[in-house]
Image (tube, rainbow, N blue to C red; front, side, top):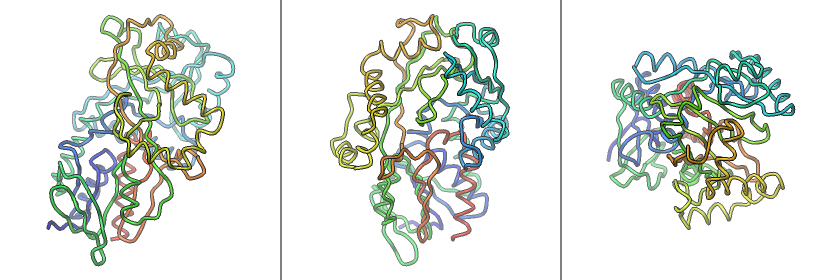
Length: 398
């Protein structure tokens, strides 16, 4: 039996950041992670973009954390030597309807305190000669970062501050033990005064095991990426995004030049048949049954719009030509031969019982426990201030 003041379940960016901030405050904290390395799921299988805050509702935690997180992560990466490229992003409008949406994004950027301006087609052509659009929102503070190296740097700092990492320990259960908790893993048990549940794709499962009473469920959405061949990599110099649909939490297929020089294209957003189903041939019957038995899922897909989006995204997963067509809206010169399959991630999208996609961070507190139920995009961007916020709340409740 191993004892710690706080056990953080989950070695993603939010869990590791929380542990680092707790250790900085002198708390005896342990991170329990089922994989043998940190950042193996959402935190290491994303586009690696720091989103500066133009796309988030002013006054929300997500907006505040995105703006603050972009600044702090840049400073952190510069200090720790983590690869980062402050290349900026163009959010491109293809028609006048999308052009009007840029005005709303610009207003949000102004209210959130992040730099952005609307530019014309000539500016788009000068900055991204192969992109197509009538106008764009240019946000120069957007950046590309090596997400896994970033989380590993956070973990190293947490260890230097006194945190302990137990890798390869999959949590099986957590039960009350006096005023605290006994956390059972595949490699032994831990006694803790307090548990921070940052289990990502399985955060709702662990919360229910701990009798948290949450009625929300994670519905996993797979995001698949292609990458441009080396000969076609000059089709994108920085980042090219489509104008987002305000009714959807997904950004749509976009281009991102990574810090290693590769240009990734994606992701789509298709229902995953398992919480760690990283290809369209993987599935978990038990987890799929859990999704299909959840009333909130059926309420989500009952609208004509969501049903149409689901069908379109499914086609992008199984038919390369449909994925390429979506990418060609932004860069018409790209051809099917320019795209090769790359990696995929699974997004832990929380869905409410009434079928609403939860867009804001959702954290629930019980006696001696905090459950991070929703930390979706831009979770990587927000991780430093979000982890600090969670550490502060934990210390208050210890």
